[in-house]
Image (tube, rainbow, N blue to C red; front, side, top):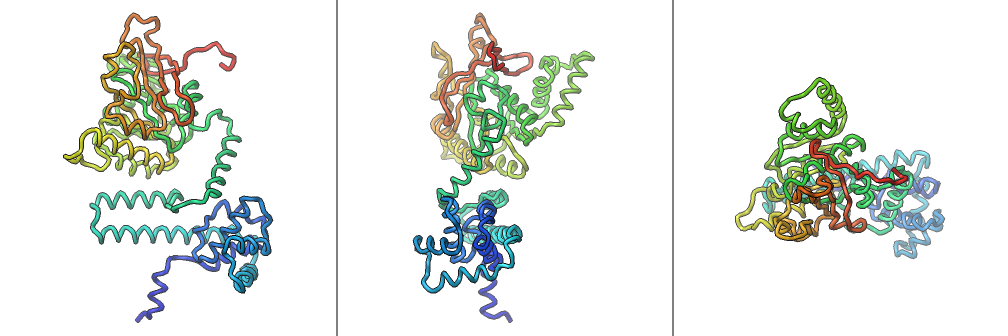
Length: 451
């Protein structure tokens, strides 16, 4: 029969005291270990409160480039209120005595990371069991919560509550170093349109980008252009969720954009031998890309999020289009009006972009309000079921072609990409060239030295 002590031990979260002691002892014996430990471990990786307080002290000292040794660490623990007279000093030297060698600090770190992972899984399992026992959610709600929590653990972004600014600053420094070393002039993924990239700084992680226009302006074409660019050149996977067009239709559009064959010829199949050669080359190029397509017309944000969590090395999510989506919570509630449903969807999309840490490009229809104005260029107020969409999006882009309304226009294929909202910079308008036979947008030809 298990004793009461055995049962208490079983209830303890997974931890490894020897590894915790060895990591702290290594940093005290050889301060050259500190950067490696700081990069890989967080204070909550230490199970014992006393060990966590010592690590937080060293962490803080490292941020201020202070000398780290037993004497200075003890002094800062005293200043921070972590020092216990008659215990802290003795414990510090016990840590150093118990450490075999600082040369193995990498192995000690690995042990702590694994025990932290076990604790996260145990905490998640306990929380899910509590949800089931309380009966506060449906099976679908609990499944979604389980997927979110497990995905967060797998990505190393498990909820840690309040985070010290010092920890955030280290992440910011790392990001700035990456940008400084990068040859690209923009921080995010390229859209393939240089002027647009400069204006919005590319497609950045955790951003919700809204691309809106009236029907016939080329929303899907623009989205496919961006999808093709990222899928071919970024080295990351891109996911396209089409609620309107079938996979075969999308593939035809992508082939047309890739090999510059008139889309009408592809639809009718009236192709020459040269056309077939171009299609074969385009198909080979697309086969080597990392584009994933889903044409489920009844998809919800929860479905998209669940599918994307299973994609490794995901770089971009594209959704065509917002107003065709079902409510974020699944089936529409009879008490909800359409504006509330769209608000739920847009908010869920922004949360998804943050969770997946990738840019999410979502297409949207505009209302007919611009049709009654003399200047038919879209405005933010034209967003259908507006309000929340405008607030949740980091960037709002409108497509406008004057030639759509005025067939006598000087350049009927001149397109405007209107940046109506931009959290990364200024608003404004970028001119593009629309090529209808290939359903593509390209940069306007400019006589500039950089071109």
